[in-house]
Length: 311
Image 1: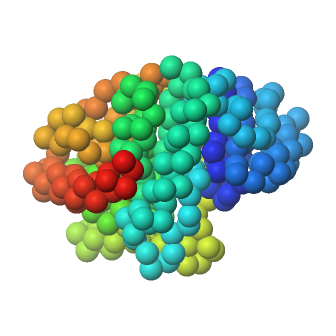
Image 2: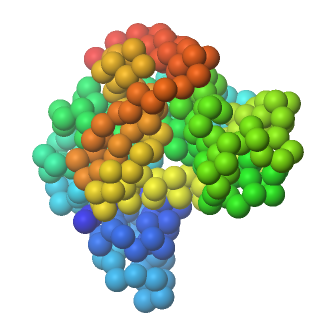
């Protein structure tokens, strides 16, 4: 299957392409960028490493790749400043994003194509994409809180000296300030986190606070996130390409899960070849459900400002 990455000349897009190459699942990876020379150069650099990694077709260019793409991943956008929230990006990024959507639509994507939105603020732009592209709504997915979730697990594991791959904890809701930690189902090696040696409420608060600020911390220290977001993107694309029906905390337009409608945010989502297969309304603590609904309300207020701009 062919994956096209729009914005692949930038840090996030190039890291996603590298993660996909190392994963070896996609049969073809196309790197698209407004700077086509950069896209071709990135593709050439990846191609040079392919004999040691996987048998894939790797190319660079523009929207001519869209009609043959099975997954279209949009990473293009302006970078967030260290003291700027993801929602603050909205006025700066919306016009650019809408033009990309129009170009994708004009290029003629496959009726079965899945669009994965990574550009921030991802929940707002996922909703805009679902309204603009003309594809079935379940074929438009936002990266949502998948990145926050793996950051969360990594910090918990490091603090407790536990194996990261056996540390399971979710972040749901908005990919932003109103994100919600789901402590009710958090485990290490299947053991309840609240029973794990060294665990306490104060530590929980510290780890969630650091998780919520992780994006800004990485931006401050190195200028922008790349490696972890590339892995998060690969998690979602692999679930699509392999039709895994994997449960991931990704963003999509909601139609009743936890009582939320007409806004895109992250809930436990079954992801496969057709995009969003199902959304699971798992029992959570009441305060967790309340937090997810508050995320939806905050995002809806922003949409009411954004949608007139989109026109």
